[in-house]
Image 1 (cartoon, rainbow, N blue to C red):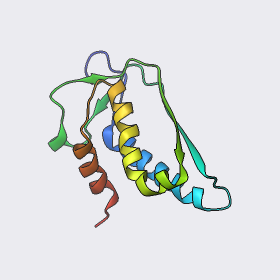
Image 2: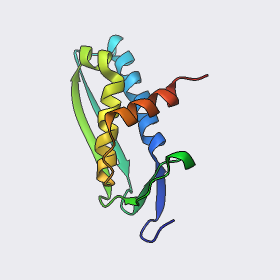
Image 3: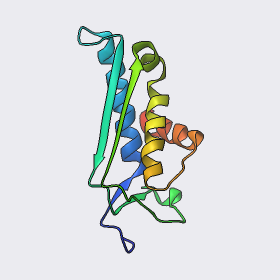
Amino acid sequence: MPLGAESVIEIWEILFYLTEFTEFAARISLGPAGSSSVVIDVGLHKTASRQLVAGKPERAFHETFIAKPPDIEIRREYVREELIAGSREIAINMTKEILFAFGFDATNDMLSNYQRELTEFQ
């Protein structure tokens, strides 16, 4: 671990869990527990001095990305139809926001391709 980092988190963890969470929220919104709008509130805690890593040698970063905020929290409200139609895009946008707190500016294409790898089981 580089100097200044106390722990690490891999990009795939953030992207995969947010994808799973937004897809679950979309499905829940269709049932009796759902409503016309859905609030998604996620947090990543104890992030100060945590390093963002690629998680795969072929995706290794050439820079070091370490979060400064002690916590990263995102709260968004979506219309049910928007969530159902775009849960994966919502997960990508939320992931981008979290990654930016580490100083990493990911592209939509990069995250979309990675998301596809993570969710399309072979």
